[in-house]
Length: 440
Image 1 (cartoon, rainbow, N blue to C red):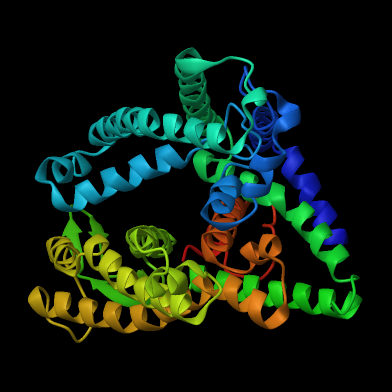
Image 2: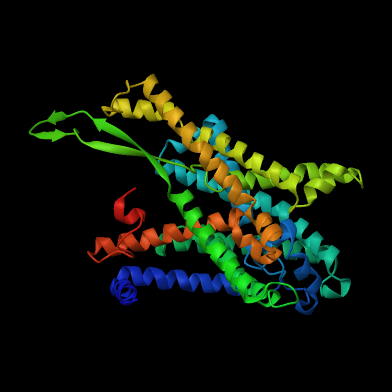
């Protein structure tokens, strides 16, 4: 405890780091305030029906990512999901369209152009999502909840929702430039964490209802949640290091190369993307099955705690993990870059043999990584079925929310760790695998 207090003191001794932390916290407060500002023209006392809808299913997931703004009919109701959707589309285009591939290779200028394209695409997505969100409001809320009627409200509220999302994007960029970095990710994480205290208190209260297990079962839940966090950290941080030897070069009176380095291949190179793709794909058969009221397929797949739903979901996560890893990691380019810089893997011929070796290693480590990622994806359903965890609290036992929480928290700790070590202070911990300490 004494060591922890000393570390906190060291953090606030560094003026630049202190300013970045306080700046980030200030912008987070602005974001959280906006999550409770209701769209002008809506009576905030009549949102009970919308808030009950926002606690389950896909809508509940969107509400959690928006920090509760979706269920509050707030000006930030759409959150950053339109921007995330646009980023995914641009990223996929970068894998398939030569123009986007060329921009990715142009360095900083190409990155600026891609960011601009992402912003324009975000506006297009907002023009579609905002009216759809307002249509949902009209379907769920009584007519008396709308103080402004007709098409004027739709136009006005659409502009407000678009401005809200663009303002959140601006907050994220400010956090990235002048705060702790990863601005949009931190905003998403804050939205997820905001629901955690209420979910935990609700779960604690429900455990003391009749035949719910009491304090013992709540402790079991918390221990299970802790172990899941530990295992997820291991998944996110796990790497397979491939040694690379660089040949010695004499330039003038200086010697270059001749040292051994490593290529860190991540066990989960795809991150959270396979789960996002799998979740989107899972809704297609459900939508198509709605044409038959008693469709067995629709009934089976719409039950997100059922066996068949989770089996298909897990298989999709495994498949998308391999597909996404294959398009994001190119062993041939890695082998060519290594050969150009005079590097080689000991015992492996440069060129084609090196590419084949990297591809085989990547395939082997992706298999356990994809299986564990699929297990993380279906953990909420397992928690609800076998431990009796409530739907609201079970979201923190796995899926996208857990991976985002772990990933963003680790990145933020690495940022703080690097600031401390650059000023010759001790890091956040003596042991462990923060990248700021050991460079892995």
